[in-house]
Image 1: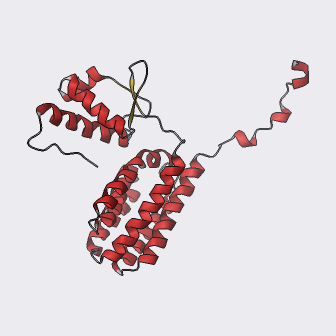
Image 2: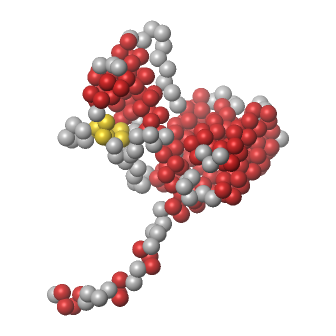
Image 3: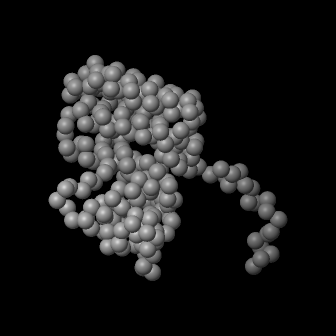
Length: 243
């Protein structure tokens, strides 16, 4: 999702939106890691603007939850937290199923267009490029959501897809096998066919399966890697002797 400056906006506003767009992309695609400090002076030098548009861009990013202002006046990229992951997963599932169903009911789907997205996904899988795969997959999903022209569906689905970019790059792609990624692309093909046949229930079911499979991999990535096998009772220290 990108904000565009119109021709009548002030130079400061245009500069702020340019900084916002660039920083948002860097944060989304992990070119700036979660928790990293953001220096206004350095950003102003990078974008060749004053600190005023930088501050305005940071305020916009803060409103979307991408950055945080700390009490010591430090600005950081928002860390990845699990406090609202359940809310996010709920919305992703609901909005994804809604997009699939409404696309099937729209009677506007173009299989040739969807095939290009799937071909791009297949190429990214073969070349082992998770960034390219995620961009192509999200573009496919945005295409589905946009078929009805429902501005609310487009806006909020766009937001939920962007909100999941960092989570997928950190917790999905590093843990999904090549076979799982190819299976996901085959599921996209089944989804595209159901949408083109105007089969709303089938499209809904397939999309739900795709999302739940992604959930399983993300949740699996958060499981303990070794701690559950530790035998703490065999530790040489005896608690009674420490009293």
